[in-house]
Image 1: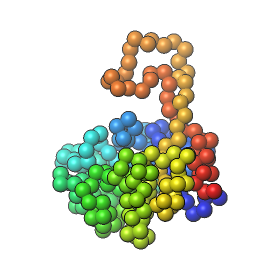
Image 2: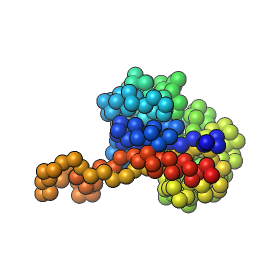
Image 3: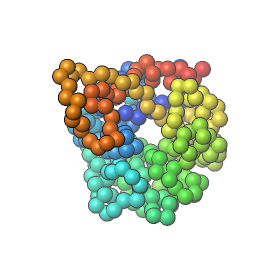
Length: 250
C-alpha cells in the first residue's frame, strides 16, 4: 500500500528503468550524465525504456547541457526537438526548466515547450532551486500549466529545505504538486514526508554493479579527471526502491 503517495526514480539507463519497475516505482525520470545533474537521454535510450516499461510511467528530462538554466536560442531549439522526440517515442511526460538571467522563470519559452509537449505531463525541474524568489517562481510555473515542481527547497538537500518545501506545499494549495528531490534517502524519506506534507517523492536508488569485463586496461580512462570508475556501473536496485516505499508509507 502506498497511502496515496507517488514515487519517482531518477536513473540513467533502460535497464535501470526495468529494475525501478520491478521495485514498485510509479514513475521514472530518464536522464543521461547524472554527474552533471542529468541531461537529455538519447533517442535510442528513450525508445528502449518505453518498450520495457509496462506499468511504470516514463518521464524524460529535457536539458541540453550542464551548468545554468539560461539557454541560447540554439539550445532552446534543441530542447524543442527533444520534446518532439519524447512525444514520438511514447513518453508519458517531460521534465523541463528555463530561467532568465535575473533568476526569474522564463515564462514565454517554458510555455512554448509545455504547449509542444501536450498532452504529456510536464514537471518543472530543479532549475526552480536556482530561482531568485521561490514563491514568485511557483506562481509563474502554475500560470504556465506545469503539473509539478521538483525541488530540494532551494537547499543542498530536501531535509535542509524542508521548511521552504512545507511552505510551498501550503501556498500551492493543490494547484501544483511540490515534489521533494535531492538528498532523499531511505533513512529520511518519512521525516521529509512528515515535515513537508508532500505526496510525491523523487530519488535515486542505485547499487554498484561490477563490470562484466575480465580483461581490464587500467592505464586508460574515458572522460575527464573527475570520473566514475571504468569497471563498474550504477544500476537501480529493485530492493532499494521497495525499501524507500516501505519506509515512506509506514
